[in-house]
Image 1 (cartoon, rainbow, N blue to C red):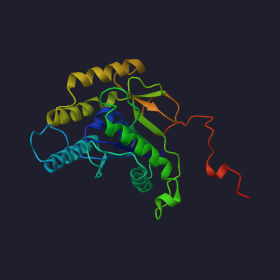
Image 2: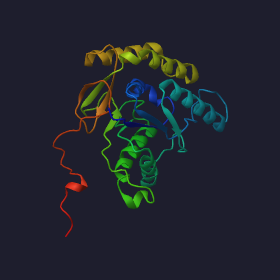
Image 3: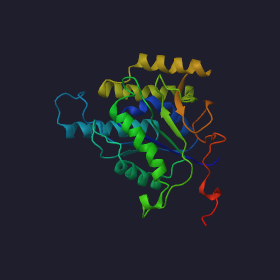
Image 4: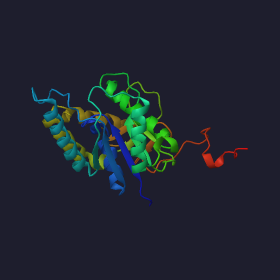
Length: 250
């Protein structure tokens, strides 16, 4: 069983609660999971009138504790909370990071229409990471690093109005660890009420034939029920050949 690397690219610590079971399922395979937070979520009011710098410090500590619960690696970047801009510079920065991490798959934010998923940081974050996959393939962008050109299938946090085909991940074996993460954030910042989590995971599970499940958009892979996101089954007939399949320049 070949080892895989899953990168989880998110905007704020606590975003990972929606995909915690999928992270744990990947770790159960023995695969590497790296959670990359663009910000520290320092604009939250959960800590009262604390200075922004102190809030960021506390939230970073929360993120590292969350990563420990999920048995994943944690990496914080220095984008500003509530002010992430999805421009070429940001995507190139993440592309260089992807060249170092060499992921086999990516979880990030997708297209959002409802409160929460449409947060401007979430939307910008998803665009940055998705664009970075392409830029990571381009030598002149990531020089002096080696380009990362292997396919990186994208899975995104699903909005209720999404029309993208979906995968349903069986997270039943990891329910207690997901609950532990939810409790961590519920007591820390007030997000992740146990009743909300139970209802969400059960309702999603019912749609997929599992006791508990998480649902993500499958941008480039075959949809359906899965035990883990990776290894992924690519869509057939995608009209974009790899470079080695193209005719040589003349």
